[in-house]
Length: 126
Image (cartoon, rainbow, N blue to C red; front, side, top):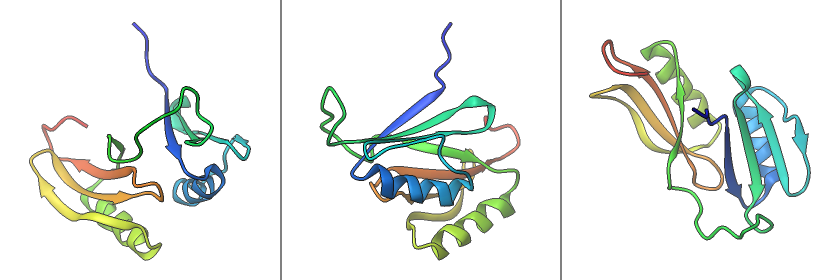
């Protein structure tokens, strides 16, 4: 069975989005050009940011089609991350709240991709 290990987001400006994610993730990209930026994250997972203006074949949609989900170690980390991101000026779609699967909030990146942070409740999958 294959294991997906790369997510590519189509963005308006890879350089702008690369700076955004470098600050958010606390790490620098391993590759950076005017049309593409790549981050290598924990356990080898990769996040690519590709210019929607140069991707082939051309992409028609942007943002809102899914979420990048970040699991944190406890409910306090959800609230602390929310405070940090709100302080950075990220657009917040959902403030920290308890849902059936855990404590969570949702923010948007500069291209309106959803970023969900959550801590799973006991018994919930995380």
